[in-house]
Length: 123
Image (cartoon, rainbow, N blue to C red; front, side, top):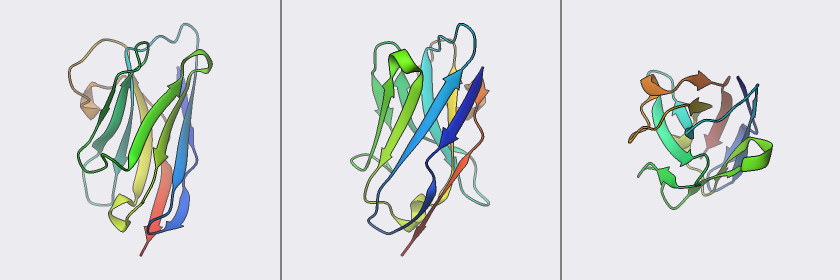
């Protein structure tokens, strides 16, 4: 399984970006996919997650109301629409997948990771 994230870039405060993550691989049937981010000197943190088949979403409080996770189930593509970006959103964003069900999106419990895409928000 390979996850390829894209869509990062530099924007000003209040701007928007949409991240994409394409999953490829034989018999890819995760229970969950999610977005995480990591800023310099900080631990990787959960941003948003989705139950792959049923579409149920979970979003971190820090981005709720601004970020929306979605997916194209048949095309194995995961998205993160990020609106009203703020400087504190600056980070490397990673997509990840977990095969089995979990009640929480802990970084250590994700099975597959993509290479990150950098988002930089200037004030």
